[in-house]
Image (cartoon, rainbow, N blue to C red; front, top):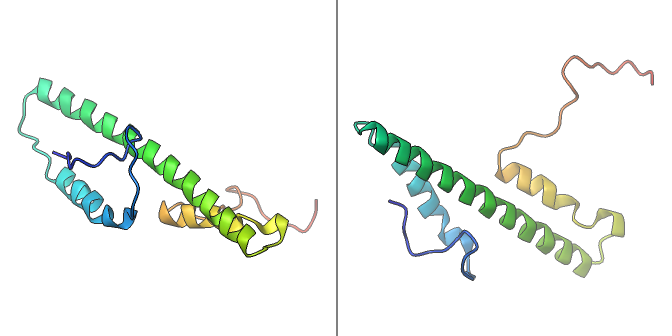
Length: 116
C-alpha cells in the first residue's frame, strides 16, 4: 500500500530533497482515509498492526528530521557568528510549527498576579 521503494526509516542511506517526498506523504494520508473497513476481524488486527508499525516509523523519521534540522540551524547560526546563547534558538520553533504544536501557554488556572 505504501511501498515506494524509498527508505525513510533509517535502514538505508537516503539523501536528497525531502520536499520531493511531501506529496507522497500526503498521498499516504489520503489513502488511509479510504481504508477498507469491510474486512474480517483477523484483517482488522493486521491493519492495526500495520498502522502501528507505520506510526512508529513516522515517529522515528520525525525525530531524525528534527535532529537534522536542529544541527543544520546551529551550524548556520555558527557560520553567521550568531551570539553563542542564541545559536539554535529558531530550530525548536520551526519544529513546533511544522508539527503543529502550539506555543507553550501558562498552566491552566494560573494567573499572573505580579507577585512571586
